[in-house]
Image (cartoon, rainbow, N blue to C red):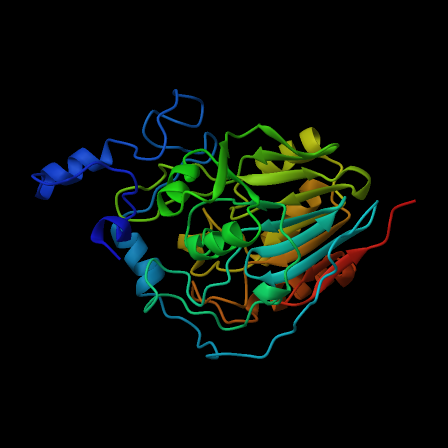
Length: 358
């Protein structure tokens, strides 16, 4: 892997002759992925959350991620393998947990993958970085033909370019991404059918079926100079007779405005897929990741019928124990006297399935 690719400087011209502070100044003031107009969430170089502006220093990052005391995870643990049907039709809805933020959503005759990661590590290199503890809940070769991929953002535990290349070679699915992320994918593999959209865009996936990109409280980066130079998002899916599904991607709770807006603009939702893990230490992670207690608040703000908890138990990204998110979710539901079936922390290979609504 070249230094240029490792640093995430996809599609930049040659940096020969630029050195030290001159190179840093040149790269930080330019966006290699997107050159669109200034908006209420893009300043001409970087994207931002209008109502949740926050920043952490490099020192904060080192203390919060690299040098925080981490619970010990097992090196591996057994999982479950799902063998999904080829298609799910009509008003039925089936969601298989593959692991972390990867799900197979089957409804309305479509097979949709969210943030697909089948690699052993979520890292820019194959020999280091967070390693998978639990195997994918669906073997890659057992996947039905994939029609659409929805990518929430470009962090390595969500945008796995090797998996996307495998999918492109096998099924050539449409890959829907927020602004700027198409440049990253096309620079890696021109066969990936990436199409980029802004917050608020409604993308038709099939007649009567759509995905709308919605704001999320997060950020993006593939390297050290491209922080917030590609957009991030959640998705509101309208699956026709199968109902509506909200996929949060990665997000903080903040004051909950994004969830209230999603309910008002895109609800009512039949199902929400909400992250519950990678949240400690809280002083550092609360502005970018929810914990399970906050995810239950998000469920309430969305007014959703049921929810799936994800983003836990596969890659050790932060300090909490491997099962802490699921345990916190169970305790929160019990304290609120909510049925545990309403919000399930799915392990890889487990399935949420609903029969057609009346």
